[in-house]
Image 1 (cartoon, helix red, strand yellow):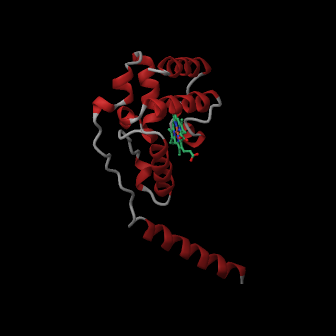
Image 2: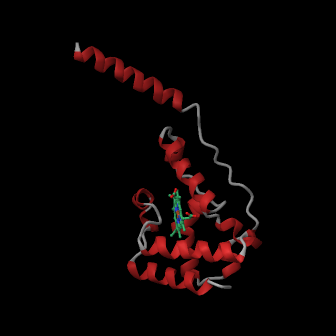
Image 3: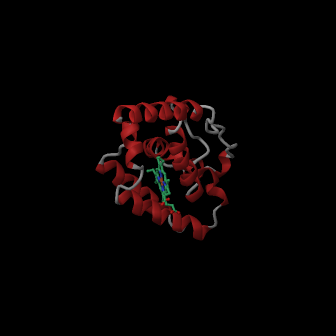
Length: 151
Ligand code: HEC
């Protein structure tokens, strides 16, 4: 009896996984105006620029890179959800469009989230070990964010 159910569950799952592949995610990056880009505008050291690109830009800019597993549904849907949600809250490609007040507020949040180690997201750090910043690297990043406030 139990075996029969398991067989149906297995078939159902297989059908779901096959059908899911017909719904790929949209991987087009919207155009990015580099004159409004956070790194272009704030001109950090090469090292800090690299950290921000590696640790934040996949979810908070129009420069998202899509690794092979973003071709595999339903994982791809879940990852795309993080990207869409991330860029909605903070878009480094549209930094130049933010008012001074909004910039300062986003910088405060960046400082807070990096201090608490909430960003980059844990699952992202597991998939991208290079995005894991050391305590010293995080401290440098925080200092940089702080230096931009009010400017
Ligand atoms: C894997 C994707 C991902 C990466 C990488 C990532 N974030 Fe996020 N980030 C998100 C998501 C998703 C949210 C929205 C969280 C929520 O819904 O509360 C968010 C929210 C934020 C917020 C809050 C904005 C707001 O208005 O609430 C800040 C600030 C932030 N991220 C900064 C960073 C910084 C700085 C980095 C790099 C050190 C980074 N994030 C890396 C996905 C990411």
